[in-house]
Structures are given as C-alpha cells and as structure tokens.
Length: 175
Figure 1 (cartoon, rainbow, N blue to C red):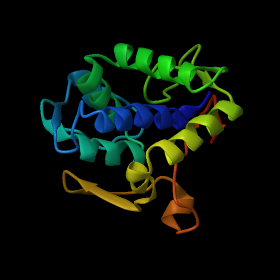
Figure 2 (figure 1 turned 90 degrees about the vertical axis):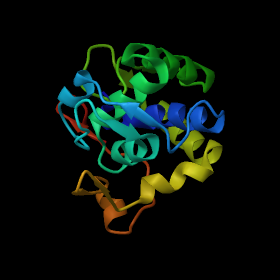
Figure 3 (figure 1 turned 120 degrees about the horizontal axis):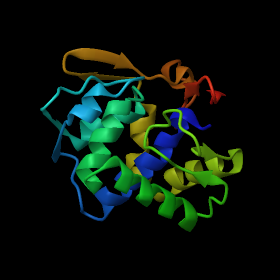
C-alpha cells in the first residue's frame, strides 16, 4: 500500500497537463463536496470555492492534501475515476509493471498498490521529466486560507532533503 506516495503519480499527470498547455498554474478549479469531505491530510479547500492549480499543487505536495488531489482530478478529468485511468495508463507507459491505482490520494483501498521498484521509477521520472516543477517538493511551508502548513516530509522541513513524498497509513506503514 503506497499511501501518499501515490501523489507522485498524481503530480506527474498534473505536471504533464501543465507542460501540454491543457491547464495553467493560475487557472482555478471548483471544490466539490466530495473533495471538501475527503478525510486524512487536508489543505482545507472551501466547499463551493475556486482554488488555483498552483495552490492545489502546493497543498498536495507540501501538506499532502487529499482534498487537493480530488479537486485537481475533477478539474482535469471531470472525475477522480477518470483521472485514475490516466494514472494507470501512465504507469504502464513508464514501465511500472507492479502498480495499480484506485484513487489519486493513496487512501487505503483494495487493489491499490505500488512496488518499491515502481516507486523509484515514478520518482526518477518526476525529477528528470519535470525539473521546472520540482521546487514544489522542497518548499518547507505553504499558507492557504490563512492556515500555515509545514511540509510533512520531516527531512525537507529540517533541510536534510529536497523533496518528493512521504506517506502513512495503517496498511502501508511509513513511506
């Protein structure tokens, strides 16, 4: 169970959409009730509000916001389920042969998995394919809706690493 390490693939898809010009950093997406109600880590998106893509990226990568992932997925692909199809297709194209996504967040779900090898594949592709967006992973703090939130990656927060993701669920442990 990859927990929030799943968000590396969510970010990969978002970065690919930015590069292709299909979305913009200053573009806003609406917050659905589904996104607003999402449990776990949150950036605290406002129900019925509009949030900029750049803020959603920060919320997803710095705060590990599950709500941010769903807003991004719905804004890009109309539903989380359709976005997950993009994630699984991309995983296959990148050679991630022991991965299957069920959601964009890493929330515990049956048949949602990623091998350690595949984790290194997506991490390597994020660094090499999208260096212009890598800085989001190393931001130590982010403020949204008057709420200051620190990076959940303790190594980044202490200046000992430059990024990527961490995660925790009972099923997956710490990653």
